[in-house]
Image (cartoon, rainbow, N blue to C red; front, side, top):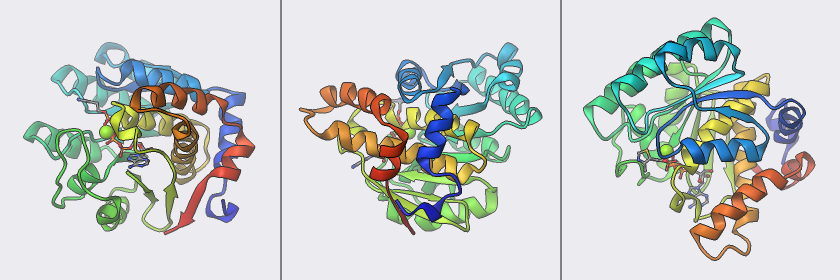
Length: 269
Ligand SMILES: Nc1ncnc2c1ncn2[C@@H]1O[C@H](COP(=O)(O)OP(=O)(O)O)[C@@H](O)[C@H]1O
Ligand SMILES: Cc1ncsc1CCOP(=O)(O)O
Ligand SMILES: [Mg+2]
């Protein structure tokens, strides 16, 4: 990749992550809990799925980053999210929002808007979720995206400008912007959306990269590039979504920092 697009390249951040695995507090959904923990471990981070309001604030103060995902939403989750965000912010730690299916119901629309107002460091979602969060029409079907990343790019830029967050839109070719800078990241595999919770797990990985990066834009690019290169590698020889899933974990783990920078397909947008 062109090294001028980030201050710290994906490979530099991956080296940091592997040298000192960051503790990442993941408040995520019941579907993703096990899958995301394995993704973070394979990539080189240290995940902990801690969400109860009684301890979430205290835990956020000792974690390197917090990630918040509304996939299986309920009042206890929301209470844990709110107090965890308060703890992360008090400790000066980044937090990442994944607005799963935020177009689908009144509860999700309201919760996503409330969380957005708490100023996430990074927002990561599929194109349908980012469109909805940006106040535009979304064709999302439940948790699955049904819009192209391209149609969400203008909304993502606007969302980044108004929220102050780095916005990462994922799909066939990903898009990352902080409102000023913008890049596209190619790679991955069509088997990825056929493996549940890989998007949720990527949100966790954004937290891991944010914990070690100086700049959240570089963190989002690093996490998405790591995923894209590992996804491309895992696709080779995979017979379908099942064998892809196993190969993907191996590829996340086996990717060296130098190879990540060499194989990352990041371009200016
Ligand atoms: N058609 C595709 N080809 C290649 N990679 C894809 C494709 N669709 C999604 N991905 C990748 O899958 C990962 C999860 O993205 P996505 O499916 O958009 O999230 P979500 O699971 O939240 O809907 C991202 O790394 C994205 O780049
Ligand atoms: C299937 C499902 N239902 C509620 S959350 C969830 C997982 C969604 O995961 P992802 O957004 O990564 O596809
Ligand atoms: Mg998702």
